[in-house]
Length: 342
Ligand code: UD1
Image (tube, rainbow, N blue to C red):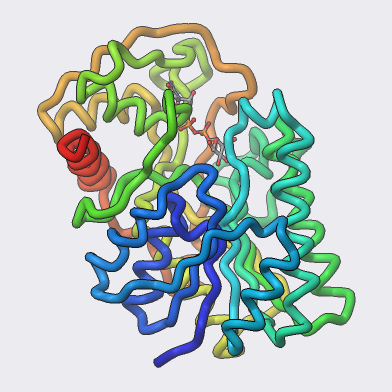
């Protein structure tokens, strides 16, 4: 049995896929989640895929006493992958203090507790949002961090700084910051996937719900951008590929292969696709119609961003492998699964 890893936010979208890959790689997984944006039944999905039921506790990382108790009850945790955070850009503009409290305090609690329980490895869920609209594309890890466009984006930037300052203050903590581009798709088994509450804010769940007839039509936010077809461009990465990068990051830390105590990696494919290309590809691979209309731009949207993943490819020996066609198909399979389960 390999080491014990604590996954915060482990019943969420990326967290659950990462828990699967960690268990597949032999790690013992302990999940905590406050279930504010996910469901405990996700644990069943993880068990179905891997044959192992991870330890789960409903716990909020802002509850420092609770997290301390968890560390005491599960001695020997070697690393943390910290997903637990609020992540809706629009909501963060309405409720900035909620975002600052949730995202910053939970991080501070974990970092304060780590040395007391000899936990040294910390993987942080960051985002390409820290680059804003980059001046040069594809964007490398050396691109400047631009002023955040939302409190959500700002929390990611501040969290990165808090981690950096803490690591370089002489604690034994080391950290890998993973800057995700746009994670999409679901596990090929369709046992786990993205479960948005209410009206989806992100593109792919809206596309799949529209194809399923739950939404009348998709609004495409703007066709007057400076891109070949006028719609925004993003780097859509398969969520299982993304999850695998976390396993590599954890073992890189535990096997003492890091070159610096804080390392940053872009996790993307290197390929930019427009909103209209996504709709077209989805329709082609699924045979489903996605009615859509062009509406005005969404406030705060970036025109175009895609990753230069070369550093992650070389240093982590990791590459995003899944095609966007298969990834969209997995999202559709998952949508059908949700519908069939009511
Ligand atoms: C943003 C953030 C990302 C964050 C994520 C969380 C950036 C660059 N990215 O992703 O860091 O983790 O939010 O939610 O800041 N679209 C439509 N119609 C829709 C929904 C979306 O046309 O109904 C378009 C958007 O305008 C955008 C693309 O689809 O061009 C992707 O949007 P979305 O899935 O919301 O992700 P981002 O905004 O890129």
